[in-house]
Length: 267
Image (cartoon, rainbow, N blue to C red; front, side):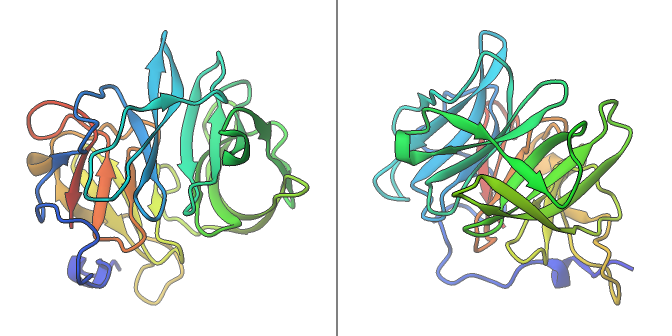
């Protein structure tokens, strides 16, 4: 059985990570005019945000920065590691120096870019411990400085699993260490660093999930923010939900309660 919602939530944070309304969505300062965005991902200090936005019909990766977390973001810049193909599922590391993202293809594959060259180039991530040669690899999310989770699926997307891997930056090889025991592996889930909680979107709103009572399996989830309050969130978007490390603020891509994109609400 699932934990009750109040028991599933993360511990309270005092002071809060950001001074934003509790339970109410707001547009991200500085990015109010950005539209058709998805896959928001921020550095741990919340001074850098990466996300996807279409350019000439294909999603590219953009980054915006700010001087302090109570200031608006400056003008976004399209990263040079973006390709003519469609980029998907970008995830910025906690220190803002590493970027994981998928390049859509047949199959889609995971790439790594670094701030050492201004995110100008990327390299494909090679995996060991699991045969992924013919699988689509996407939905990556940094969990720590050198570990990340990712999802795999067959070419026809009839099968999906999610895993954790540890990466060797010198060799650009990721060793798969475990499979995440998900009752439903299909949602684009954002996990807390220790996999104690997961957050994802569907037509009902933003949901939270956790391991079920007396079981290792992570459950189906309960509604955390109802779509009647926060507006529709398209679960088909690339990673529509990002949760800060303290888990008291959620960035998400959606229409919001009225118009616009990329609102943020505090739990």
